Amino acid sequence: MKRVPKPVFFIVALLILLLTYTSIFGIKGKNGDNTTTYIKGVGDIRWGIDINGGVEATFSPATKTKATKEQMDSAESIIKLRLVNNNITDYEVYTDYNHDRIIVRFPWKSDEKTFDPQSAIDELSATALVTFREGGEYTTETTGSDGQPVYKTPKGTTASSIILQGSDVVSAKPELTQNSTTGQSTYQIALKLSDSGTEKFAEATKRLKGQTISIWMDDVRISAPTVDEEIPDGNCVINSPNGFTAAEASSLANKINAGALPFKLTTTGLNTINPTLGKSSLNAMELALVIAFALIALFMVFVFRLQGFVAVISLLGQVALMFAAVSGYFPFINSFTMTLPGIAGIILSIGMGVDANIITATRIKEELWAGKTLGMAIASGDKNSFSAIFDGNITTAIVAVILMLVFGPTNILSMIFGVSTTGTIYSFGYTLLIGIIANFVFGVFTTRMMSKSLSGFGFARSKWLYGGPKE
Image (cartoon, helix red, strand yellow):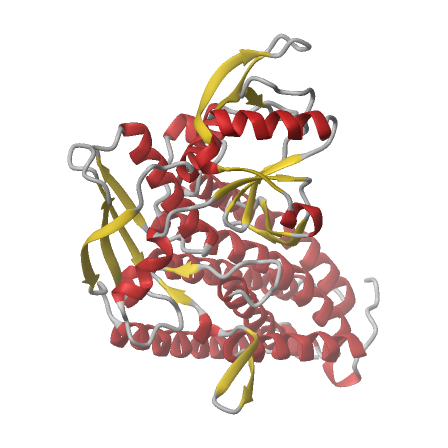
């Protein structure tokens, strides 16, 4: 067995306990009456409609003129974009084309105390502003809920140089074309500009030939194409180096059209949604989770003794990592809306984590009863258990990824299944996938590292402490 230095056990255990504490309670500072959050904890999780309730709002055009289907699709697209950009994955959007209505349901904010429906929907009903800007410089880069980078806040020349606004765009439509090099069919977005837009765009494309003109929706960059040639007539196309899919082209065209909507959305209906379970049920679930974890810890220590103690520390780390991934603990992972199916994903992945630790501990126990030395038993037990743990987790991870692709924000599968951003199923896939990743990190690697490190101490050399026979 490859030896692991003795201090490794204490270092790893200390880091896990630190992660557990901070992921649950977060780190906050107080400046007078203001509280600053440095690291988010469980209290910062945005709970889904089914747990905390939310808002149901009906949006309609402010004008009396009937909106076209394309305009309603654009309005729906921008509302979805705003929800996703706010890390709200538990939402429902329905469009009634006959009566020009868009019905949106989404949960309260995590820090919402007054439960004011009007303030909650203001950010969604404001008309989006699309701008075409010189260059493509941005200030911050985050990761969207679909795993793709999100570039925010233009800076430098890009911030100061606006070439066009959404009102300069007459139409944006996806169209099928053929790549002249590869011969493959692909999609592009055809833009038609107004007279004033044509004049401004002609000057800009002549000046910026070979450079970038980026497209922004409010504070978010949605495209950064390069100017190939001067465009004097107000008709141009946007291409992607790898070609757009039908869904990508349709989505980008809708976003550009959304910035050119001739109407402002107004709220014609407003209701609060009561949670399915409520806070009292959530408190009951939290208590049940604590009791269940305590019982599991007792079982692991009673049956597997020292190896069970190590497994309990690893399980703490797995739970902590899942909380951290949901609350926005890490700056590079956005916070996530937790729903009941999301909680089910956490519980299922914890069960898989317990299973992984039991498999490893049982294999080590069997090797000890077969007469091997402690070092050989740990090495063989780790090796023999890995394939069983890997097979079970990797197949579940594939299912979780498919659920996220099918039920997540617009993605590569939308052209097959349609845009079906239903947060409840997406939430289940997300927490399940995070749980499996955490299981590999803690249930496999840290458990083994701590076991090998611990076995180097004299008091921990007894086979009985690992479930083996007394010597």
